[in-house]
Every structure is written in structure tokens, then in C-alpha cells.
Amino acid sequence: MDHDGDRTGTDGDADDPFEADDDRVALGLALLARLEHESLSLADAVDRIETVTSDPTITRTILDEAELRGIIERDDGIVRPKSRQYVRFEQDVITKDGEFSCRRCGSGLSTGYFIDLEAGELGPFGSSCIRKVTGRDD
Image (cartoon, rainbow, N blue to C red; front, side):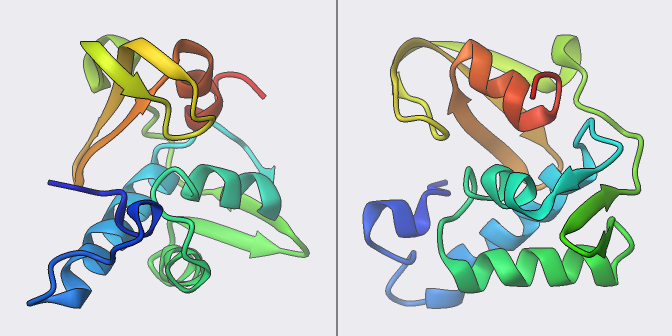
């Protein structure tokens, strides 16, 4: 399943243009629900969401839906994740060897780290970006 959507210049299957959007929203919600932050700036939350999509409409939908579902609280540019179900690196991160580009920074990788979320797999990331995306490092 391709989750880059707008990063490749397409928005999914031509027969169902909303399918990719639904996948991206689900992945974005799942990611926000698993962040290891007590709070983070809206800009930092958007940075995390941009690993799923760079489409501003989808980003806004993810943030609005996350707030409606009680996944996050937003107040004056601060986002507070409500869940305490963090990514467990030993269980929720899959390592694959191959030729990859990091979804966050674009660096070439020989080892990719993928987050196994309920909504699907998100990645690949490099070793430092996986920690940044999940909130282990700022």
C-alpha cells in the first residue's frame, strides 16, 4: 500500500481519489495517538504529520479529527496528546534492510525503521528520525 500520496505527485487510485486520503487520515491519527510528548508546538505536530502527508487540507483534517476524537487537545498553538500508548521500539518498530529514503529528512538509508501502527505501516525512517517522529528525541 502506498502512503506517500501527495509526495509522489498523485493522490491515490484514479478510480477512488478519496482512498489515499482516508489512509493518510487514519495513519495521522494513529501516529498522534502514539506520540511520546506531554505537549508540543503545533509546528512540531505538523512536522510529525508531514511524515504521512504534506497536503495542508489532509493535515488540517487529521488535526481536527484528532481533537474531535479526544486524541489531542489544542490550545494557543500547543498540542497535547491525550493517550499514553507510546511506540514500543522492541515491538512496534520494524527494521528492514534495503535501499530507502527517509520519509522525514530524505536521507538515503540502507536500514529503514518502520512504525507498525493499527492503521498501517509508516516509514521508512533513519535511526535519528524515528526517534524524532515518535518523540523520543526533540
